[in-house]
Every structure is written in structure tokens, then in C-alpha cells.
Image (cartoon, rainbow, N blue to C red; front, top):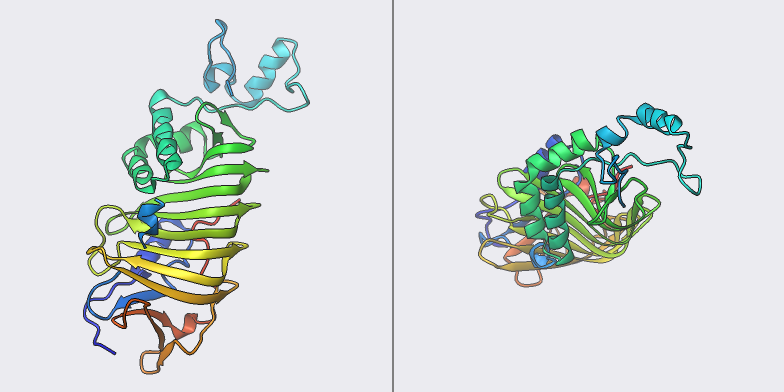
Length: 315
């Protein structure tokens, strides 16, 4: 074993991430990788990279003008002698009155995601934060809508983008109000440096189910001693990785380190490749490239389900 010089860990970042956003306290708190030679090193993050109501002139009317609120909508319908329900028995949706600048931000995000360019999508989310905050909290009142590039729908059926927070979104196919099929989850945070977290792959009933990957990427520069890009790739079952998992890191110098692990229900299965360091109370697994890069896992976390979807869909 070579002496550890500079090390990197996800623990501090994940702790801040969970404290600020209140989600996913698992990632990075439960495991960490060290570079025994002083360099840390997934390129996956960087590589994987309806018309609303009308006004009196027949043009599109804003929510405030067309339906000031649920009661106002009902009164408007009654005053016109019309039933509130649409054809087919569906109740009329009160759609968000989105400004052109807010729509432009969403369109740029969709364009980047269609090109599998997570970094550009994250940069747009970051630079358009003010628009997204106003859109989510004031215009949408914290509710979820599916935006398909043309219009919004609260039913969330089909393909499009859904904001669950101003800087957290899901893009792909939805069924029954949940991700279903191909979907990408993306979240932008700023800890010590701008970073995006992501989960991509197959989803079923709002959970990752099938092939996919989850990780994060510092898209400007990573904090000192930390990897720029981290990715866990494998097969998911109910948001938990199952079977062989590939864990990949990429450092600032462009060096990649790779580990192959066996995971059952999100929990690492220790085999004879793991080295137990009793005085430190931790397990080490050397990377496939060389023995100067070690993945470190605290012994208290060895039986915990920490290999999971980083951006789980919350109801």
C-alpha cells in the first residue's frame, strides 16, 4: 500500500447538499474513493453527456385574466351557462401564465437535453435561476406541470420536462404522472463549486428499473482534492443497483479510475478483492488501472443500501 497524500471524498459535499436541499442524504456520505498517488480520478457525466384559454379576441389569455382562481373559473363557466367539465368529463386545467423569458429558459434546457448535453443544460439552469424560481414558486405555485416544448399540462402524460424544484427537473416520458421509460433527472447545486447531479436510464412507475447510471459532475472546476466526475453504472431495480456495477471517476488532469463491484439490493457484496484495514475501520478496493487508486468504504456502511438512484422521484 502506498501512503495517502492528497485525497478526495464526497462526504462533505453530500452533507451540504442534503442540508441545503433536503434530499438524498445517501450519496457520497456512505462511500468515498481515495487516490493513493495523490490524484483522484467518470467521464459519464460529461459524455452522457396545449393551448390555454382564449381572451375575448380569440388570443391566448393568461391564467389571471382567464381564470383568476378555481372559484373564478367556476363563476366564469356558470356565467356563460357552460359546464366546467371539458368534453369527456375532464375538468378544465388552469394552466400557468408563463412569460416569454421563462419559456425561453425551458426551451434551451430541452434543446440541451435532447442533445444529451447535461453540462449545457446545467449551465442554462444556473444562469436562468431567477426565471426558474419565479416560474416554479409564483407562476406554478409549486405544482408540477409537463412542458412539451409547446404547452403545459398538469396531467403529466407523454414526453416533456417536469420541474420538481426550480433547479431540479425530469425530462423524458411520463405515464400516470411519473417517469416511465427513458428519462433523465438533473439537478444543479453549488457547494464549493458549480455541480450537477444526474440519473439517466430506464424508469418504471417513477423508479429507475433497468440499465442506467447516476452520478455528479463539477462542470467548471472541482474543489481541491475531489474528483471532477463520478458515475455509478449498472442495472437498477426499484431505484437500487443490482448485480455488477461500474464505478468510474475522472480527475482534473483527465485521469480515469474504474472499479467493478457486486451489489445486491443497493448493498456492496464484499469479496476477496477487498482489503480490510482494522485500525481505520474501513474496506479498500484497488482500481482496475493500478493499485495507487483505492475505493474506501467505512465498515459501518458495508451492509447499508447506498448504491441507489441519486435523484429519486418524490411524490
